[in-house]
Image 1: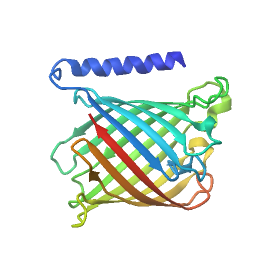
Image 2: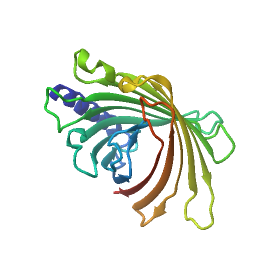
Image 3: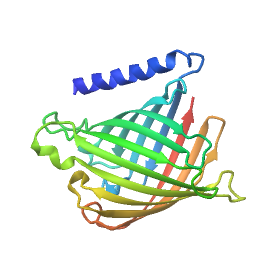
Image 4: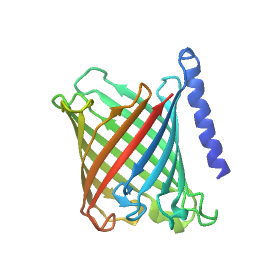
Length: 255
């Protein structure tokens, strides 16, 4: 555990040093985000059953260099899930390739360490998660936003006991911003279909389809409120054995 945290600290320090030279005149961006989810579906899986979830996140943007780090605390809204509380530590790098071209790519690459601090050390189901996200903002007619996200997780602890954790999830998303006169911001319509690559012992198969809608309200120059509603049609019982309708509310404060 200490070794992993030292590695993460080294990554963060490296990110800081990258932005310290030419970008020294820029400030470190700090964003605090509070999320409520009526149910949390983690890559299609109901992580807290039918209970809701609360996320608290601090996001540090290293001088606008593209490097940053997020720390998120996740917990259920009811008792009985103490062992599933966790803290995620996630350094990342964001950027754009082929800027302005039709095939422009907005990418976000990150590596996260997920620590279930409520479990004893010898039982901790801690994992590493790599996320590769690629958006194509100019590929389709204006307003349509395709994206591909690949997740790969592997156990942080050695031994065969946790080998079932390792696996992929491939997510294919399409969003559309619908202008609505009654709303101050576009209505963000989203659709997603996912393929399970064995993560957590799930079968290799198309696992779910999700449709959603959200919008944002500027409460001030620094505070944004974003409510949303989503419906997941589950197709693989080893991921989720029921369809789920859930809502989310996100409050973001940017310093």
